Length: 403
Image 1 (cartoon, rainbow, N blue to C red):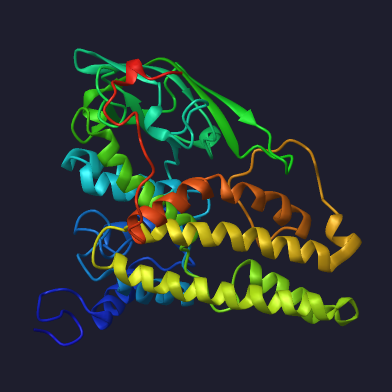
Image 2: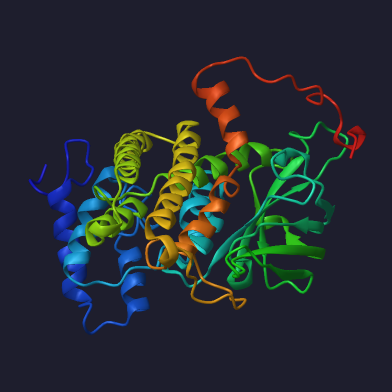
């Protein structure tokens, strides 16, 4: 074993990753290298997500060592891949493709996904199947080596800028709702794909509704086996909740940091009641942060479990409570809002905008990525082991379900 290069198991250690990062920076100085060229070189060097396999942006290294690479690159002023813009690809599509994709699919999709050359969206929820996702009605019919897809999806973040989508559709209506679903990669440039904006309470339209009419998807873009889409989707959903609720933050990072800074800057607005509530929010935010660290340690050992649902649930509650506190603390100033013009943003910015935006946008946190009510059921049944709710439709063919 070479000291500073690999562990006894042949996996790179922290010093080995620092050496490789230094080599990347020497060969591609951030000051003189185009950002996209640097990101491509970083992926090819295995420093994109170090726990991924070699040749797919990783080095088969422990997941926890990603922080070592990130710190070295940040100190050197290296460009990042704008994770807010490509969060669905990074947090949901990539782990699903890695687990269920063919070698050809992994090689085709993962590199441009990570560099941000191709943005992804998620075509799961439907107008009649949001909280009950398995009741989805979008149909995919086999036609030789292609599938023809017709249906409607809703609450699709970033569909207006996406090149690809992860899609679940019903391929066998004769089976119970969880069993007749198949998972696909959908080309958002197909002429049968129509994206319409959904204007939110913020005035913006980061969400969309998507209509699919005769969309042709090659069978080569199917993830997993026919009829096993629900199994594949569980990987996406578990990773989605971690991506939304389990982001790594420093102490007093995120929205609680903004609220605490406002408190420090405005001594004249302080009251005893606001102080006590802020302290409770601060403690809750710190508990959530430390729980997230523990969850990430569990992730290093395998796929995320239902604990991610608890993190996402806590994130939604905290975001709404803290943003409500901030608006109340700022009084008239908290009611100000910059612009109600319909806009199509690339992502959500909870810390770079005004208090009014945070308050309004946080209302969606208890809906997106699984409603809080659904997540409470998941935590109750899969974490606490409580009896599940009665499900009378469990063994009924989808076509026979009342709609």
